[in-house]
Image (cartoon, rainbow, N blue to C red):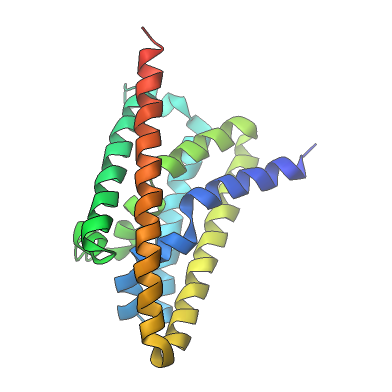
Length: 206
């Protein structure tokens, strides 16, 4: 029998780690340059890629690291934490435009958005947790719902941006600046936590 509360908690877990409200700051340049239809198309393709990856980790879990990659998950946490830490530093010193530099002018925007915007160490870890909580089919459904909600939220924020920008561009720029600083703190905190968790897991082996 399905536990509705547990399903909601699992969806919320992945949704919080994807975090559309802060994610929109990462996509500031796309939000400003692309029309809503094109922006939505890129999000759908990126969401499809992310959903496939999350489902793989939800179903296979540690098997991917132990049998396929032949590496420990703690190593992934440490490396992912370092990457997040560097992104946080870029945000602190250069603001949201720093991530445009990190992502580059990709001709395949969907792939650039999927990795590392949607697919990150935190969201992959959450997918593995979801896979342990639920049966494979239910876990994949949870992942699909969480990604769909995130993409709908991003599209809604893009629509709101296009509606408000002509009259309140200064307000939008202020939001981007504030949200960018918040994201820097958030990303930096997550990065340090991931490194510490990875190091703790390594120490416990000895």
